[in-house]
Image (cartoon, rainbow, N blue to C red; front, side):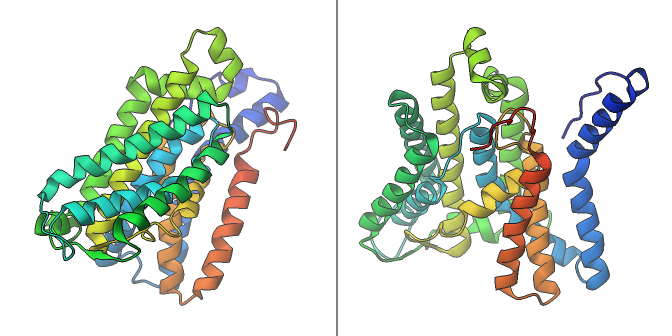
Amino acid sequence: MSVSSGPSPLALPGRERRALYRARLRAWAPLLVLIGLCLLIDIGNPRFLTIANLVRVATAAAIPLVLALGTTFVILLGSIDLSLEGVLAVGSVLTSLLAANDANSLSFGLAVVPVAVLAGALIGALNGALHVGFRIPSFMVTLGIWFAGVGLATVLLGGGTVRVLEPLVRDVALARVLDLPVLVWIALAVLLLAWVIQEYTPLGRYMYVIGGGEDIAALSGIPINRTKVAVFTLAGAFYGLGGVMAAAQLGVGNAMIGDGRLFPSVTAVVVGGTSLIGGEGGVLNSLVGVMIVTVLANGLVLLGVSPYLQQAIQGLMIIAAVAVSIDRVRSAIVK
């Protein structure tokens, strides 16, 4: 995360100075929360900060991070993408059917990875095209694509489950490099790619401008429709990769493999400090948000908290995060 240096606080009047301090504190708040959460959980259970448990946390965070990065780009636009679970299901099913499996004789090895990513990108492009072409709200388009994706995955498998037998695909989750699963290294590589796109490409700059004000972006000559389609396509590609990772981790592909992954993804993005209004935040914020959600889940298990109470805590957490992060000047009218 980066915090703009801005004007010197000492050069501002008292009220503006306090507002500037609050803005800077808000920018660093997610990281401070993560550090505080780690310390509190370790006090409750000293096993939390052991190497073995931290590796478990990193492994648990790998797939949510890849999914959250795709979600981040869409939210930066000021839009929302609910198709995550459907696209992930398609990616996992294609992986299980095209790699060595117990349902057919196909065995394309790691070639299934670009196929699943491409399929996810195509579904994302469809999201974007329908959104801008027919001017349908993004949440309605992606909601429909979510169910369509799950339906397609169900048809492809006939409603069943296929085991992934391809060693190269399974090694994505089982093999280790420098004592960390390959899954974690893939997530870090995707994080680096997402950060480069955000910071050093026109697409990254356009996302922020459109999220900050679509009317201003139009006046600036930014290709709004093309940018939106490109962002939804990129998000779909990330979800498709997440499908490969999920199939590798669980050793199966089925239409329900994405169940329950949408809410933690959006939660992580918002808790990390990316504004639902758009134009503020970024991929490093989402990294912190994913770690907060994952650390909290891991810590609650170590502390013996009921799974049902864990869900309640996550729900309250996203409400609190939105309440803290929302810019009430930009959102004078709340719908």
